[in-house]
Length: 371
Image 1 (cartoon, helix red, strand yellow):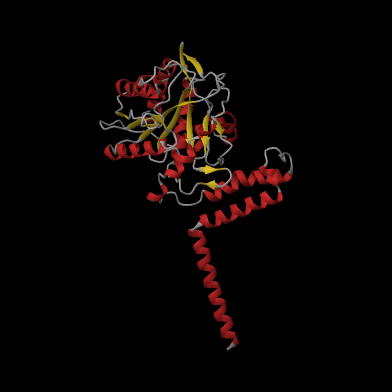
Image 2: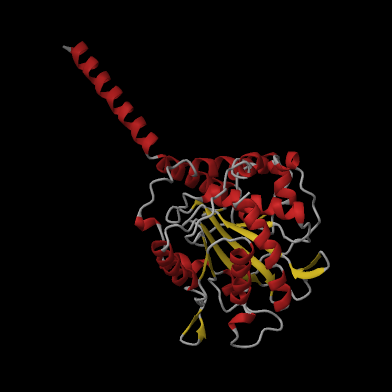
């Protein structure tokens, strides 16, 4: 009788273990959260200087181990969930847009001097080369080498066939963003005016049907209100995509804010124009890993789109683009694979410089999308 009980107990234990393994395999985020929380707690208690910018522990073996785990293992574990199953609850939320606008705290994208880096396909296959010369990863987020694999991203097919239906949507989350010599109240002197020029070039010169949303989402009731701008813009994007399901490219055209001493100006073919920057949001923070309620099933294609455009720009117009900036939130880039946020010049550029940059931008867009 004792042997039978022991045998039955072993069977029940085996069944329990199998069920547990199957559950974890289907809910990898549970394991990733547990491992990540344990890691953060242990580091915070054992090595408090790790979270203190004033007491770095550079050069130590422990720091190397922590850095490797933080940069490669944690995001890989967190990234293992199935992003193809997107629920409505994972999409736009008010809470996200309250946190996203970094201009609220006066923090601007750090400027990195632009070098006329020549495109070399072999070098671009190396993620370490891309980190040094092509990308600028914000300190609040992190990206793995597998996510910025140049060989994979540059070889991803993003080509489209031209259609009589609209294929590109251009909009402006911060439509009130203006330039040094902009006239007050003149839309044509803001990023919206630059969008008008880009739309005309794409349609007239390249035969691409474009929908340009000239709405302003960062001003409500006559007052600037940037805290909900992404939320209002998202509603408009969803409306256009529902009305024109043929749209495959979504471009959010912005203007950056930099120190007055920073000049984002380049001369291409004798024409002075504003430099611009491609911007990716990857829904991940350095402290907590992937942001679960900001899923983006199109993240890989977003990264491929910006990198292919950057490569095309460097081939034809060295010095026109700044480094691709990667930050931790989503910025409405999840609606289409070919989604793009562009920072066109800065507050100290002229309207003419900004609009002049639209000609090469239209050209590289056409080259990547319709080769």
